[in-house]
Image (cartoon, rainbow, N blue to C red; front, side):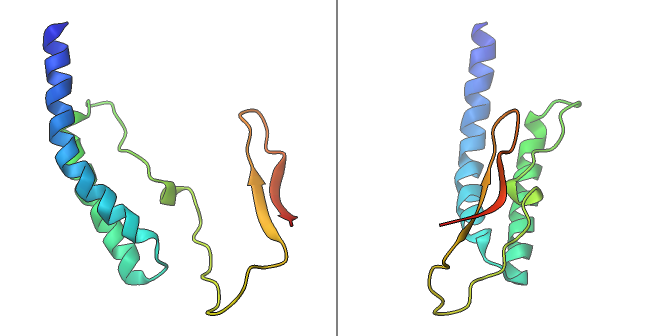
Length: 103
C-alpha cells in the first residue's frame, strides 16, 4: 500500500510540472482565431504526450471541453448586452432548458 502511495505522489509531482504550463496555454486558447485554435491543438497534443506514460494500455486519451462545445461567434465590437440571453440548463436525468431565451 505504501509503494502505491509513493508511486501516486511521484506521478502527481511529474504531472504538476506540465499541468501548470498546460493550464496557462489552455487559458489563452479561447480566442476565435485560427492561430489560437492551432495553439490550443498544439497544447492539447503536448499535454497528451506528457500524460501518455501514466495511462494504462486500456485508457482512452483525455477529452477537453472544446471537443464537445461548438465555438460561439464573437460579439461585434461595441455591442452591448443583448435583451435576451440563451440558457442551457442540464440535470443528470433531463435537460429542462435547451436554447431558451431568458432575460
